[in-house]
Image (tube, rainbow, N blue to C red):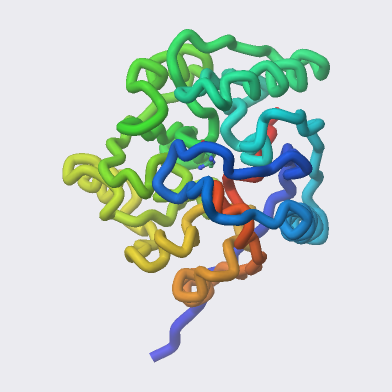
Length: 277
Ligand code: ARG
């Protein structure tokens, strides 16, 4: 028997990142955060630089947002907005501690002439919103259950003119969609079924029959919090099992060490917002 590995093709991306210069774990708004555990900020910056270099080394463009003192979670740039086809839908954070981040992201888009849709409903940007440009003609996957309000999904549909599929997150360890599911390319996803309600698992199975399925270990090692460009998959170095599964279906895993940033409850994807002009 001859097994032909699928040819995966990378597409150049534009990303937005924010340095962890002011990173700290001063409060606990997810089960991963322990304010009593020490954080090495210098190491966090170094690891974050490694992620940025991995992305630029793959040929992607990375824009930077200025970090602000007093906003220790601002490094998780994915949460600040969600963009599709030149429209940016702003974030409205669930927790007060992060509320001020939204304005910094808004200014970034306003300064560059994006159409900006200000949200009424609570939503945490790409933390809970993923876009698959070629799946079913362009599909938004939207998580709810912990952070983003279900009502925000309708706002996204109205802002973007794309169908939005609501997915119910049920495990507090996987409080954002982007720690439970990721786009690998323009059409396919990888996800951990255990993070979703039975109904949402069924929806995912129907929409993505060829999805890569991750297990609990992959999810706990933050493997799903990845950035894929169609071929390369930049993911947390701890997620060796998931890297193997992705390699087996033709993707090229690029591991990066983000151990310090895991202490805030995030990894690769949380640090990277995709700009879709
Ligand atoms: N400490 C941050 C919070 O709980 C982590 C955000 C991680 N970002 C993400 N896209 N999952 O809000």
